[in-house]
Every structure is written in structure tokens, then in C-alpha cells.
Length: 143
Image (cartoon, rainbow, N blue to C red; front, side, top):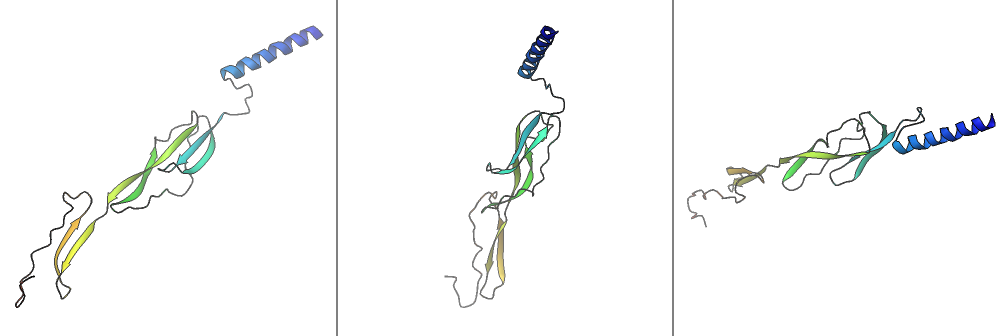
């Protein structure tokens, strides 16, 4: 009887080792957990958490932001790649929509009245601003 128990124990141990080598979970109470990270465009980690295989992860932090620069303002667009069910460790990166900032060049006379106005952005064909002709004024030659 002792010999049978020892043989059974050895077979059971071999099976457990084989199952763990090929990825079979021998403990049904423990689910496979994977790390899912959400990072900003510059790689800064915004959130890291563990999710079970097959779950769809979600971001629970504040909406990511990106500061405007001289030419564009930015609005959070979403995550890349697209969020899908967990099949392994994953990293999602914030993406942003860039909107050109409008600038207005306003030309005024000595009374503060607008003579001309030019609106432009970084996407305007020319970045040169051509002032309007100098208005004629009695007793002044424009120089």
C-alpha cells in the first residue's frame, strides 16, 4: 500500500510540473493576472494595475492633458493602441488632437480705431504679415 501511495505521489508531482511548464493552471482558484499600464505621450506612467485574462481594462484617473505650445492647443483624443480584452501585459499611450491657435494682427490708427486685421495660424500659407497701406491724413505724408 505504501508503494502505491509513493507511486501516486510521484505521478501527481510529475503532472503538476508538466502542467506548469505548458501553462496549465493547476489551481483553478487563482486567475492569471496581467499588468496594464496607461502612460502619457512622453512615457510618464498615469496608471498601472492588474487585470485578469479576458477582462477589458479601463483608465480611472483624471483625463490626460497636454499644455499648449506657441502654435497648437491640445485635447485628449484617446488611447493607442485601442483598448481590448487582456491577453497579456499591455501599455496604452495617451494621444491628443492638435488645434492650431489663431493669432490676430490688428493695425490701429492714432485714435485706436482698427484700420485692418489679419488672422493667421501656423497652417496659414505665409507667416509674413503685410501691413495695410498707410491711410492718408492731411498734413502727414506717411513717413
